[in-house]
Length: 469
Image (cartoon, rainbow, N blue to C red):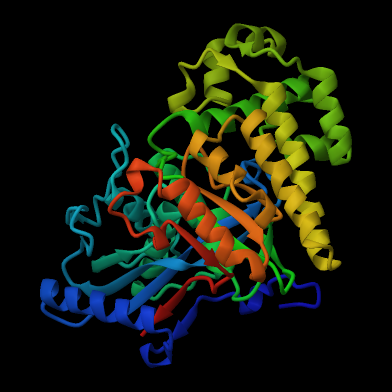
């Protein structure tokens, strides 16, 4: 890492450790579990293991796909693979969790069908396909992959379980094929290939999965991808709470609709500013073209866009284009039938949230109080609830509980369900967790029979992806 805390690309290779170096009991137990399942299923020992963490985003929601920096950290919860190769070029997938059926397909004809709701194995296929398509010198004969998958990241929780699965597939495929990719290259191709499943994400999840460091959050910036370690206050404690509402962002149009609304806001402001709108799709690129500061961009949104929803007809009239051309240039497959778009609210959130990220990072670097960090998190949630409209009643309730025991709280991840993250202190952490258990989970019908300690827990930054041999 250089003097500015930015990753040195020459050292940017996935970490390879021996199994004997694993000292964490929980990880050792899970390695033994997947090893035994692999032996029982395939009759031999696996060649290697891959571990890829989930993540929690501390601040900076729904802005990575607009080109703006975010501030996540890697979690202890992770995807773990046991992997072996075979001469038969077939991908054989086995999940330790019996609710996910086994799957196999020929690697040479690997195809991802996105006609229905996404299946667990399709995320894995995204990673395999991404590496094979980006390898230099693909071998004449492809090797097969036998894989056992184990995961303890709650699915559809906003903690990046699906992206971690894509990243684990990419890393195991690259290692099995003995091809050299840097961590940044793996993060970038994982972000790109996850779009095979229909999600128009921005790259945060994949970046922190590969670039995370124990003990610090990361300021992740894009174009080019770079990371800066963020010093967190020693007395900062982060608590994650699951709303018990699950949301798979690839299964509905909600997530992609927000992506498209940001594109449309970008293009209309560009058109009204005399720029060539067809070549602009991201709000960060629009800012560069205009040469404005973030505060000025927020003021531009308020000046040039109206608060009422825009119809597709009005958008076409402003841009002087046709429905067909708009669908080709801007809309995604599952947003073509949407007729109303909220542009003012989405763009205003993006520019204000991008500003909050930099304020959060600077506050951490200068040793600002937990109250300062917490206030930024509170402001972020209010914006996500009111301007971006991606919260959920369960998330809003979690964020409102125990205000006297924490400094700030917000939804984390795409929203519409999933988890909240709260900032508290070491002396208040236990009482805060107990309050959440009493006021949210004890009364929630979906919490009955569940291990509540897996639904609400204290977390700290962990290492990014690595390989065990």
